[in-house]
Amino acid sequence: MEEKLSAVAKTLTPSPIQQLSLLAQSCNAVNLAEGFPDFPAPSHIKNAAVSAINSDFNQYRHVQGICDHVAKIIKHMHGLDVEPLTDIAICCGQSEAFAAAMFAIIDKGDEVLLFDPSYETYETCIKLAGGIPVYVPLDPPCWTLDADKLMKSFTVKTKALVLNSPHNPTGKVFTKDELETVAGACNTRDLLAITDEICILSTWLCSLSGWRVGWAVGPAYIASAIRNIHIKLTDSAPAPFQEAALTALRSPLEYFELLRRDYESRRDYTVKLLSGVGFQVEFKPEGSFFLFVELPEKCVLSDVEFVEELIKQAGVVAVPGCGFFHRNLYVEKLSSADYNYQKRYIRFAFCKSDATLAAGAQKLSDLVDSSGLLKLFNSDRKMQEMATEKASAEILEGNRGSNQDYAAETMSNYRETVECHLGKVLAQRAVFGSSHRRARGRKVGTNDAKTSPSRLSRVSLADESRK
Image (cartoon, rainbow, N blue to C red; front, side, top):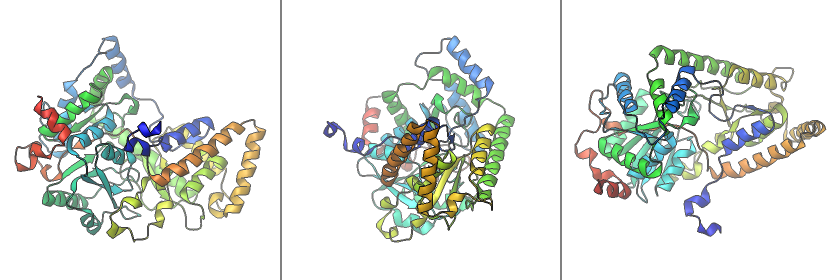
């Protein structure tokens, strides 16, 4: 019956990162794969959700206070004047906000540029909207933007560009010069820029990723289209969690500064840990909650092989980096370069409790050699197979063979999935708007030729005509 599925649905697979998290639970491994905090959410925000439920805020609801407060934050952080009544749409987290944005502006055949490595939620939403993702590779180890590569990726079909900063999976924050390059390109070619800035301020940052409250910000005609599509898809973000999200947004700035310092401390701890056991950490993330580290040159294993052995021998789960790369979707002019490094990176999430990070450190320390480096780096594949067989025997003796089988099956599935670069999902939010209109002090949504409703998708225009 698979022939009944759409062409896009046939290409989608279960999220391999979520599969790795299930594997961590099944094998009692330390989960440094999935990027969600595993420590308690702030009490005052949880209490606000409980209070909202007890006050019967349990039906479809739009909490305008969120829009009002987001507008104030954008004014404070960026100097932009955003009209909270028209320029902001509350959605069920970033995933829906981004999907609705794609449905609002992308028609069949439109090309959308993304920076590589990239998280897969973007590609999937673009394809569902009928668009074509085109990737522009960033240059390691600092993941810098090559302006020449960017310019070579534009075609007459390019309609939009996605900018994720702080960047997942690398933790890069794009520099002012890079942003000006992107803004200039969008301005010259009359393109839309979609920016994803989840790590700056969101409910996810407050350890509340499962609450599914996010927002999209942009010119009124686009925000309206996103809102119309959101209503058709889900109608309303969870009502009590909207009330609690407002409480989170109203937290004093000192709270967010304390939170930033706390994550910075976790980042530094994890950098020291991973570099200490032999990973090449040439780039310290400037934002986000991930470390994207390279295997040392002497390690003969690929990223997928390494993660498989790390799970089996150390009981620590991370994410092979190859699933974030999309060499097959680069423009032909860029495809001849050497991209072998794309099978050499591992992503670790450090947004974890002290206990989780300490447990991971202990498990890694149990697998180091006399020089303090991971034994996995020094062994050839034959020795790795022997070590894995020994680990398997020990697990079987402990009557946990089913977990070992599950580990092998999950990594086998991951191998198949990451080679297609499909199926990964992460709760993030989209902050939407055209880069060339984000000048300090200028009102977002200015009615000029650049903000013509003709730039909406056909679906959005149909919604507009019924208003």
